Image 1: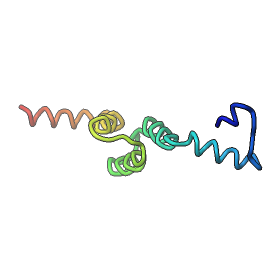
Image 2: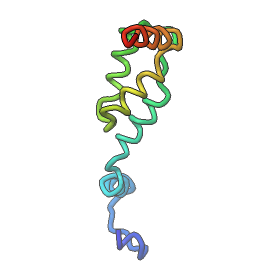
Image 3: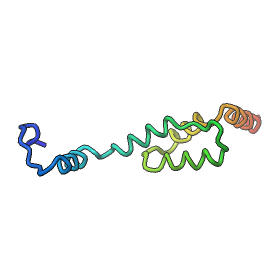
Image 4: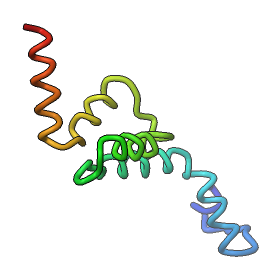
Length: 94
């Protein structure tokens, strides 16, 4: 990268230059893309099973885990289902 800063390029082609850039800075990029995709995910008209499978695919490689993952899942399901789950939880505690 020092050569790049000094405007000295030692790459045979633009393609090789881009590969080098991706190697240098690409770490974590896939994780960021997965998190962004996860944040856009909504259940909408999907069944719960369909949504769970889609959510699992989106989570893989995102670095998300534990409590934040559970909370994000709750935010992504339909409100009516979320309300029913909260009511069931309240009934169990009573």
